[in-house]
Amino acid sequence: MDYYYGPGRNHLFVPGPVNIPEPVIRAMNRNNEDYRSPAIPAMTKTLLEDVKKIFKTTSGIPFIIPTTGTGAWESALTNTLSPGDRTVSFVIGQFSLLWIDQQQRLGFNVDVVESDWGQGANLDILASKLAEDTAHTIKAVCIVHNETATGVTNNLAKVRKILDDYNHPALFLVDGVSSICALDFRMDEWGVDVALTGSQKALSLPTGMGIVCASPKAIEASKTAKSFRVFFDWKDYLKFYSLGTFWPYTPSIQLLYGLRAALDLLFEEGLENVFARHARLGKATRLAVEAWGLKNCTQKEEWFSDTVTAVVVPPYIDSAEIVRRGWKRYNLSLGLGLNKVAGKVFRIGHLGNLNELQLLGCLAGVEMILKDVGYPVKLGSGVAAACAYLQNNTPLIVSRV
Image (cartoon, rainbow, N blue to C red; front, side, top):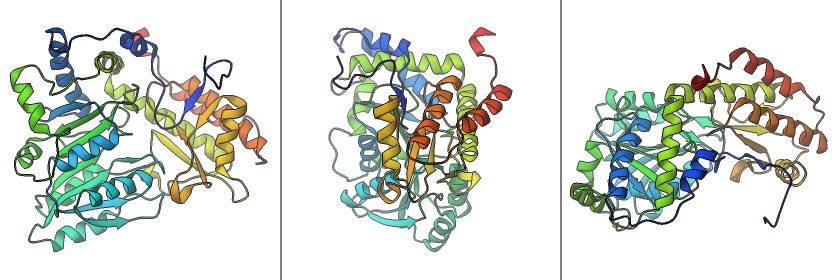
């Protein structure tokens, strides 16, 4: 029994880890197997081909690594860069800040471009840096697609256009941890060289699997990159790919079966339908926030995220109390404000295997919590705004038409 038992289901609305669908849980409920038997390599081969579809790449090479998003970051960096290499990276929230910290600790020379938390990456500064860099000393541009701490989504197509406008050869490295499988991601079209995600976000799996996808250009860069790496070395993976056994060390058998089930669910719904569903849930959440008379941390519509909304609270309310109250009274889990926005925002995650009625339950809970902490919300206002939008925009379930 859970030590902190609460009746009914926990309403999990942090922006990761997310709800795990029942078919995925059932797929993972199995004993260990010999990963050297014919069965696991055969499944791995199909997984690698299908993983390419979520990145929208035909030429990229995926690596399924038993790690978290942080490990996937390190894999992307150490396989493509050498100590002392110059990178450009953007601070727009806590997770972009942590990736920059990792780059610095790995010995890279990081040009840090800062924006106010709630704004997107300052791409005008990127353009000026690339224009000045006629010697091509910048080896990589590193950007977080969707900043989970502030609910900000960056325009990756625009980053690629800037790189192309200046004919700059820098690698384009993207953290897609809270975007891939929820927001449209086009690795080949946008010329992304390394993209990465984590299993606990929109894939709706347990934590423990980092998925990295490398372009041919990135694979070529890995042949001369001098960063120290062992566990994350792509070369070891590629060696076992060529042998047809695929694994340089023991994988998580259960997570592999879970990934198979998760991908099947995504493909059954259709990726474009998945993106549309996330867009609906994001829009409904923002309409509820507006109806409550509160503000979105994200400062412009062009940066709104469809996977997480960071809600700014009045100065007399500690947003951490909203999160505490939700968990203690209503069995509702919301995201805390982090670092610069700690105590100032709470976060509603709306990503992964999630539907409209689940979201409405969360919004109803938030309204009661706001009332509890002394905010003069009109009960039902946000739920009504979200309901009106969803009732007019939710299609029939694809598999039931």
